[in-house]
Length: 335
Image (cartoon, rainbow, N blue to C red; front, side, top):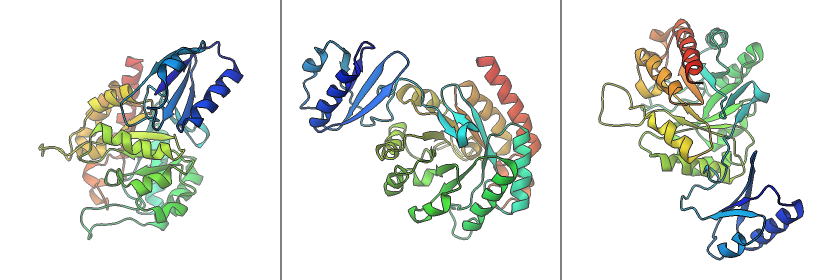
């Protein structure tokens, strides 16, 4: 249920209303907008008399909603959420757009530093790099684990770029103290125990859509994190598995528009994992920028043919620079 309050409401009236609602056994979520305050109720609202609330002089409207995702719902939070990283070094949502770039996997400190300096020069605001790598085959490179995070932290000190890396297990969470954005990969989108634990942190979480999950399921996974108290969630469209075989996955750009309609959370697009081929990254990145994405996540490697992970989909620093310039032009054109 959503209760829209009039601007004329007095502080004591609002406090009294909230106390009464909480006494009815529901959780109350307050969203203060520029022109209106929204009171969202989470829980069993069947006992609450909507006519009684609607009759209060300071209530503008009362609406029952059927969607199971409450905190992620735009009806609860009409204004866009802006997720700021590292004091504003990067921001996503509400008109803010940031580029995330870096290698699929951390291989060495020299490799990561070289790439980080290059992508920063081209306008990237966040450095990505996999320390823990979920791979289909147990014989493929699995990442450097703790050493990978240490390398990312060192390069962060050298370049000033905030870092993002993927978490695969709750037990690894203490290793992520210096990580600025924790990424939940597609394979862990419905690892609910992990999502609950991340809901207790105060770090931004980038949540990737699963390979075979629909938009409602993605928002319900975001709800798990937000229900724990952490509302700094960035959604990521990275393509879904279809019958098409010419690309690694099928990039669902309509999801950007749908998610923005349904939710106030920012949406980032990953064209690298979606297509699986470097030559398709630029056109998909431009299309994502044109359809209103709040950021891009692009894989960049200084030597793609010899990358230990996902070399075929990785851009060189020179190619990334070209993409970044083109994306800026698209954003200028649609602004």
